Length: 167
Image (cartoon, rainbow, N blue to C red; front, side):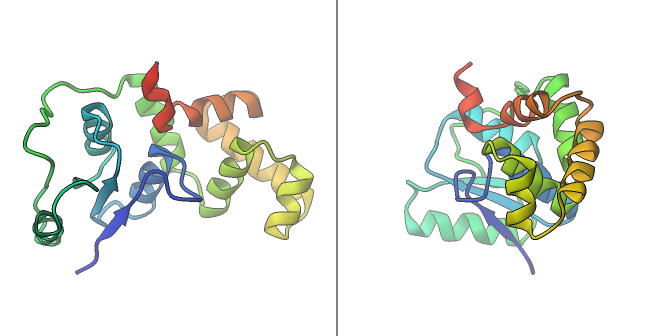
């Protein structure tokens, strides 16, 4: 059986965007978030964005093994003290998540690089493609996220970052 263990803050990941993207690419693949962030809001958002479970890094090793075993059997696992009844993802965020889930792998890489502040020329160099190809990817990203500028795309994607929880 396959299972993805995802750290929302690992290099190359961008908060919930990575989870949303993974679920968009492989909806049937079970994803369990493993995180040092134990905020109940983060846990609930992870589940709403498609994670099968959420394992805090602070749990005992036996508990972590139990949680992974449950996920491999298709059962959700979250800390006992978390209430999933109150939804935390609003319609706007859900629409952004839908757009991110529909990105191709290359478009997702371009979006992450846009979020890092890279210019088209730098992105083209990093991905070993032409600037015209990068521009085409940016255009597709704007269309899928239903925004009109690179800045709006970055703001939209950042709304799925962990830092956006402080708002």
